[in-house]
Image (cartoon, rainbow, N blue to C red; front, top):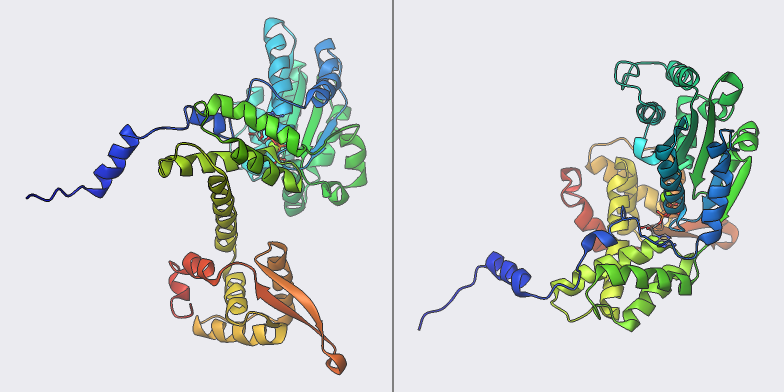
Length: 404
Ligand SMILES: Nc1ncnc2c1ncn2[C@@H]1O[C@H](COP(=O)(O)OP(=O)(O)OP(=O)(O)O)[C@@H](O)[C@H]1O
Ligand SMILES: [Mg+2]
């Protein structure tokens, strides 16, 4: 009798070929996909369009600020309005240019302005990718707008990141941008800022707020029922019929709707759950898949956060892990020993306390004040994620070889 051994790779490939695919169009679940219909956002689509309409009449619209929690459809709506206006612009000879940038993607102020310039048609010679002073870049952009007498709508998505960049470079570029019209003799520039950070205004110069926020549109949170409808629409295009059970759909909507109605989270959950269901050759996506998908997404987030920490933050997480549930004093002692073990000089207790508070914000550790009678108060910290996750994440880093 001969024993048939199946190569593990072949086995998986066979399963993929013969197995049932639940997902018929993966792209529909990708974050770049633009759905044909935007549900529950008629008012917002109207408001954004209304606010930009003057541009079609060759006058300058007010600057606009679009607010709302993550995943509430801000980027989607603004991009759709831009593309609809663009269609009209192409059919006519209006000197209008619509520019979309994202300050989280560009990562530097220079990068953001260069992206703006490229979309206005400036080439590498006219606007080199590095080397000029910001004020010079800005001057060249304005000069071009004036020369070509164009009306520009400049969208800065995730504008809150720009305020961080601005603080870093010390340049008040936002202020200059919002007031650019005063420097233009010909042509106009309208700024559209999009943000999911409702507190970012507090960090801005009041002069910037008053000109950037000439008009404001707030995107409200989706309800669980609205999320459900958005998902149903995606499922129709992304999955084969009957591939997502009713109860999975309900759970997915409820989970994404629980905090603030985040459509992105809902679609991410659905995509990951769909992949998991295909992997176990299930007939359909069930509640279990949705729950596992939520765990996986959560885990990825925490691993990414852990990896992004500088060395001393990592050491502190390990210290909290090793002395979980103990006071800052004990954690500091443990941290000091870890520093010695990896050949680092320890930071001051003050710095360490600050760092503990910062790490606490990410939810990886939590602290609570404990009253100790005549000894006063102390703060005790404990690890909120599994020690295994910490070990797994730091395992590949040789620095920590001896301490975890
Ligand atoms: N009303 C809707 N109908 C269909 N899909 C939607 C709707 N709202 C949001 N989505 C989808 O949800 C995801 C998140 O939407 P979007 O990127 O517009 O959120 P956002 O408000 O810009 O979030 P953030 O502040 O995090 O950038 C996208 O994949 C988008 O296609
Ligand atoms: Mg967005």
